[in-house]
Image 1 (cartoon, rainbow, N blue to C red):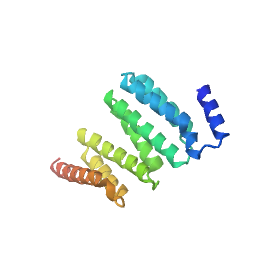
Image 2 (cartoon, helix red, strand yellow):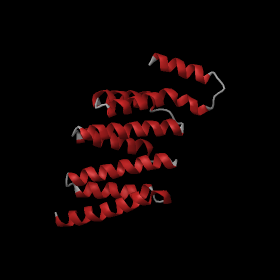
Image 3 (tube, rainbow, N blue to C red):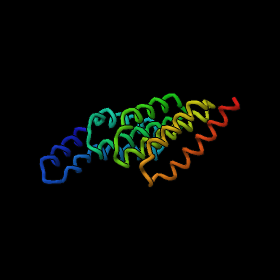
Image 4 (cartoon, rainbow, N blue to C red):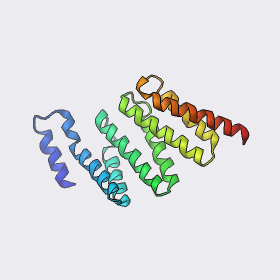
Length: 168
């Protein structure tokens, strides 16, 4: 990572646009994706965690988006390993950390985390929790017409969770 820090320092001292500061974070993200595609989930999770820890306090929208994506990918990877406890913790952290952001890409990532939480609770037959997350997802995307598919998914999931809860 020392080489990445040197690249970032060199780029920050050049006349590139501010977005270029993301290169080290983007390289880490892409490296984690590559490890994941190669079936090395453990290494992918480690790199996502390093990226999250290193950049979680940044406020630039593009870095925030990358951290949120890393959290989502890390949760997904844990889910593929059957570790639903870790999935819940990571999605909850993503939601709590970024639910007040108003950038469309970040709102989408938060809504996806909410939907994934809702689906996970539905699989576990925790209907009240599932319905709550579907409702949160709906409120998260209320002002974004481009998220109609999420709106439909959340509405259907909320209906099913409410119906299932009433039969429990």
